[in-house]
Length: 160
Image (cartoon, rainbow, N blue to C red; front, side):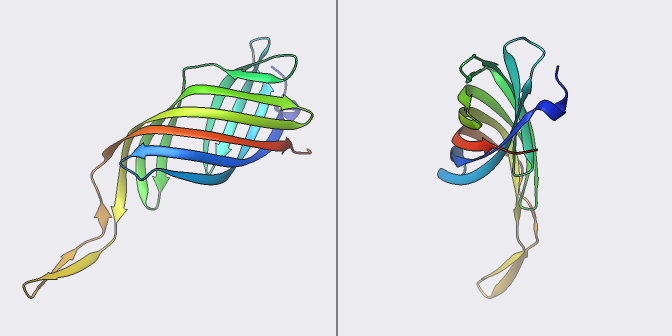
């Protein structure tokens, strides 16, 4: 395995289509840092995806022309710890491909998502028949989440 100093670092911009119930579907633009490094297996690379404080390491074969074919299935466990959400999600790579050529990386990835998430509810009050009720701030019970995340992006290699 080569030293980490020889790894190629890319910053990609793109978007993700998120369709994970019980949340509304949507498209989200974003930026991702990607580190491509030699793997222990000849002809393979490790691809580390980093975005919004989360990371995932995947294996891909790399052809002489720079085409990447990701090994599937591959699972990335994600421990969610946000001010408004917490829980655990497993993102399982369904398909992945990309190209590293002329200092540019493009990726197309699709993940199946499965897990449980609790959300924070703010303190609120309401009045019924002249009586005020106060609901304290707290967390909902963890609810199952399931769906897909499809993302694509491209970007250039960063200078060290």
